[in-house]
Image 1 (cartoon, rainbow, N blue to C red):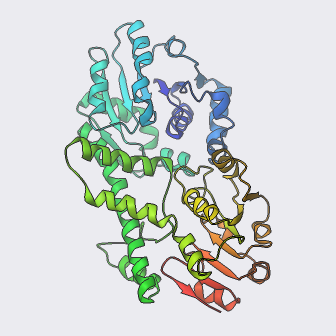
Image 2 (cartoon, rainbow, N blue to C red):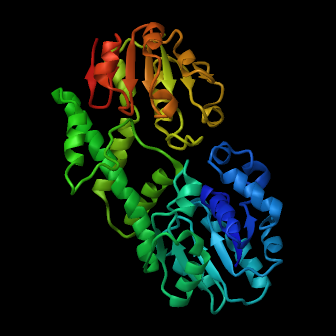
Image 3 (cartoon, rainbow, N blue to C red):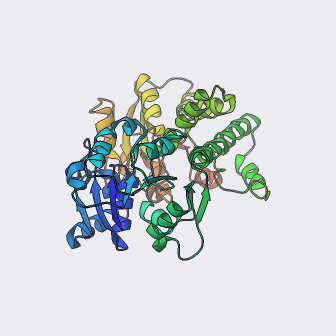
Length: 429
């Protein structure tokens, strides 16, 4: 099929690479604010396994071509228009639809792979020519695993009200639907709402577990026992049941806000969703509060090492990342920070600039601990899981480890002569 992919989101880059890889003739029209010359150097793209190599391979063999304008993209007839835009770019589609009108009335399939308001796919179909159809295909791509989640999906949530359109989508994605049936069809509005509702449920589980961890702290209970007990109940399970110092990310956070907007627009107020968001923002400063408690509020002039800035391992993004709230709280108290991250330092520098209380570190993570009073683990990169504990104990002036992801064994850390404070867990030498 001839496919036009429009957008500069991770989902757009992944779709362009994967669809051209399996034989479709793909034209990629990046958003005007992020042309290919910018995208090819973006840390989030460079850090995605296989993705950049696949894009460059497609460009080299001609299965993928780039366009700088909608008119250029439509010089060849396009059977499928694949939209992967951010919610903020929804109002910028006039140029594309004007170009579509300019090349005559053709029967096309529009695949809405963007997180737009519920009902937007129906509106987009109304802007297409007679005989064209629009479907909603929920974006389930995971940062750090984009290629894998697109090419080996666990499911495709397809919002479709026409049998012919469904057949065309199935042909488009046939190469990624071979091992097992992964296409789940439902009405368009249902698919759009389902995508938002899934992330709302996952966020609720995380925030609820964080509330339980706070209670466990107050009662002197190790929350790991509670987590294991809850997860062993088949009605609950273990997924997204790990307490931590808050979640972030461009898609997860954005989908929650979009779900809140949908609730508000429908005249309904979601006290639950508001509480979930409030708990998450509160948890982003939990390591700061533990530091404050340990030193009885005397923080000015101290130095803290931080391991991890990205909102999760495997990505260079810091969108809504807990480290941003944590840094603001530390700097407000005059705390110097030595921060290490294997991928997200450029994004952090772009966000906070050259702050006088920040020193970003590359190379050995332990180097960030020189002269620091305490270590804060914020992102659970694999490089941080098994440090040289003897050397770490010698480097940290106050021998305090604040584990924001509960990846360490409290008893083991304490046995190395360190004070351990996790999320609902603690141990002392």
